[in-house]
Length: 191
Image (cartoon, rainbow, N blue to C red; front, side, top):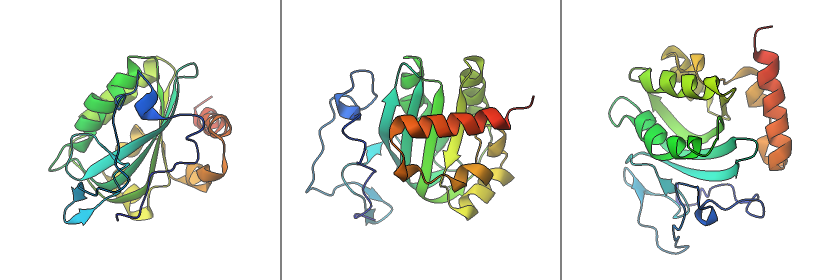
């Protein structure tokens, strides 16, 4: 797992630790010291802590004018034991929402498992962004993770699967990806 780096191709557009509104502003990273683990496996030092021992993220892009953020994840999303959604919402997304971000693209390619609890934080987050015309989209989650999220009812709050998983997000520039996802969301809304 230590070789799985967060997506870095957009660093010319955005760097979270240089963004004064980012929850990671001022963070310093080591390229050589691997000290963070998920269970007994070291992860790359570029991943950021959210407060959970099993789920880490990287804020890879934010556009405050469009109210759009892209967050990539690694690890095990465990709401059952660690209440990861609470940490994500309270420590990361609420700070972004204070600065008018209401559209969140969650990249889950490196999320290995999902363990559900109740859906209160998902519902709360969805209602808050929806009031402002925003959305939550999950992209690239593994099939078994998406299925577990569906069984837990998370798909009522985070749009995922179907057309979203067909998007090869790594081939887009940030604005192109935003446009693509926003168009998919608009098509999914009831008329």
